[in-house]
Every structure is written in structure tokens, then in C-alpha cells.
Length: 117
Image 1 (tube, helix red, strand yellow):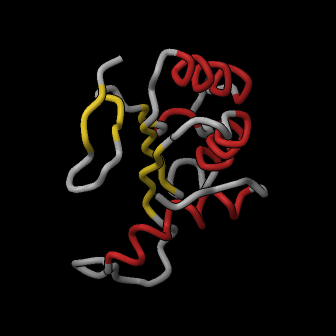
Image 2 (image 1 turned 90 degrees about the vertical axis):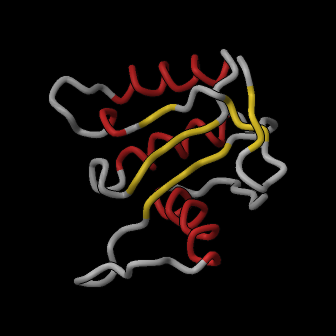
């Protein structure tokens, strides 16, 4: 797996990220298969995951939470959009909200160890 620095951070993220849109409640999706696929991706070096509350009303985040807990010693990075909390979303989100959102979003599904980097 090849890695690149993520923006201005010191994070080395995999060039191949895992988009979780299709894992949560789509016709034919199976949680056990999704977990196996995510674990395999981590085993192959993928460390960047994209999810959102809208993917199955938080289901993809719940699945990812299990993977994060089972890989506690690895640096895994999550990009997550938050659950809408207002009728009209703002044009710009404050930095504190963007960095806190994924941790809170994954934690709210099931207890897990989440570390801010």
C-alpha cells in the first residue's frame, strides 16, 4: 500500500480509502460480509475510511466502530459527515466541529476507544 501525507497534517493515509456508502442497509448488504471486507482492507494497509451518518442512519459508523475497536493498535483515520442538526446546513463548518465530528459520531453508536490526532 502506498501512503501520502494528508493535507497539512502529519497523518500518513493510504492512497486507497474505503468508502462505506454501500455497507449500511442497501439491498443485499450483509453486516458480517462488511466487517470481513473492512478487516481485510485494514490487513492490506488501508487506513482511511469515509463514512457518514446518512449511510444507513448511522449504521456504517456502527460497523466501522467495531473495526476500530478490533484494531486499536493501528492508526486508522475516519472522515465522517455529521448527523444534520439544523434545517439548513451552514456554508462553512468550524474546524473544531470537523475534527470532533467523526470521533463523536463513531462513539455514539457503541462504546469505543477513539483518539484525536
